[in-house]
Length: 524
Image (tube, rainbow, N blue to C red; front, side, top):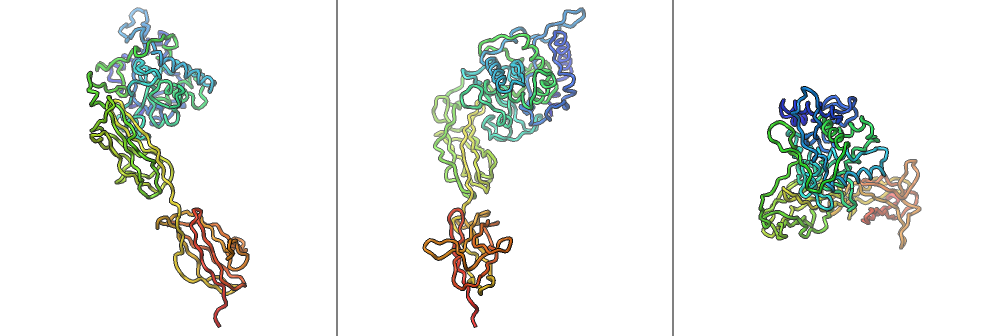
C-alpha cells in the first residue's frame, strides 16, 4: 500500500527530478534527507518496519511532501533552480511548539530510554498537518476546525472499515486520519493520551496528539538516538520510504534551529498548482465555509434531547431510544440536518431491520430519534453514537448494555409419576427446562437437592439419592442447563426406606421446582 502512496504523490517525471535535486542539495548542506542505509530499501520493505496497511498510525494516509528550505551549493555548474521557501519555515506556532517540548519532557520521565527528540515530533507534525495548519488552535491547543483524512475505503488508499462509529472522524462507514498528528481512530483507541491534563483524550488537541505520537514512536523499546530505531519508528507511522525521507529532512532542519511564532501565523505547505512540485495531501484539506455564512442555517452543535438509560435483556427491544437535537450557530433548533446513528462495539444489538448504522434528518424542532434498538444474544456493554455536521462534525456517545437472560421459571418437561421399589432405581429420569418469559435459557446453573420435609428443609440423609463419579450416594448436585434451557437429571436411586420424598430444584435467580418421589414396594 505504501508503494501506491509513493506513486500517488510523485506526479510525473518533473516532480521526481525536483525531489532528487532537493535530496542532493540537502545532503550538500548537511541536512540528510535519505533514510539510514540499513533501514529501508523501497516502499514495501524495511528492516523492522510494520507491514503496510492499517497497522500504521495514520493508516498510510497521504501527507504533505514539501521539503525544508535548502542551502544552495555554491559550486560552478550547480543548478540554483531548487525549491526554497525561506527562513520563515523555521518558525513553529507557539502552542504547537510547546506541545512538542512538553511531550519530550513527558516521555523523558516515563520512558527515558527512548530519548525522544521534540524535533522529530515537529517533523512529523509538519508533514502530517503543516504544524496544525499554521497553528490554528485555541487556547487549550485544540484545532479550530477538524483536520480529517480521506475515507480509507480502499480506493487509492488503505481499506479500513469504521472502528469508532464516526465519533472522531465523522464517518461511520470507513475510518479517516484525524487531527494534528493524523491518527486513525483504531490506533488512537490504543495510543491516545491526555497530554494537557484536562481529563480528555482528544486527537484534535495538539498536546494530546503530540504525546500520543511520542508514545507510539517509542513503542517496542526503541532508542531514537539510534538512526535505525528512528527510521523504524517513522516507518511505523507511515510505511513509505518517501515519507521517511521527507520527515528526516524536516527533522534535520529543525535540529539546526527553530523559533517561536504566534499561533495562526505559521507557514502553510504550498498549494497544489498542478506543476508537479510539492503539493499538500488532500487528507489535510478542510472545507472552508462561505465567506458570509448564515448562522441561522449553519450547523453549530449537537446535544442530547432526553435519551434515557439504554438497557435491555438479551433478545428484547430497548424501551428507550436515542434522541438528539441539532442547533445552529445561534443556538436555535436546526431542521433538515443529517444525523448518523451507529451501534459501536462488540455486540449483536441492531436497529430495526438489522442495521448497525442509520442516517436520519432532524425535524423542524431540530430533533431526531433513532430507530428502536433490539438486543441480540450477546450480553455486555457497547455504545451508540450520533454524528452530525460535515465541515465541523459533532458527535455524541451514549452508553448502552445488554443483560443476559436469567431464568424466572423452572418446570418439568413431563408429568410422569416417579416411583421406585426400595433398593432399586427410578425407571424415569427427571427432565426440566429453565425459561425466561417462556424462552429457554441456556447455561442456567441449577442445584438439585433431596430435602427433608421439615419447616426449614435441609438435605435429607435418607431416601432417594444420586451417585457421584465414584458411585457413592450424594443427595445434592450442581448442574447446568444445555441448549434451550433443557436438562435431564442423572439417574435417581432408592435406598431401603419406603416413603414419599421431595426433590427440590433451584436456579441462581431463585426459580424453584419441587418434585415428588415415592419409594414403595410393588403391589402383590
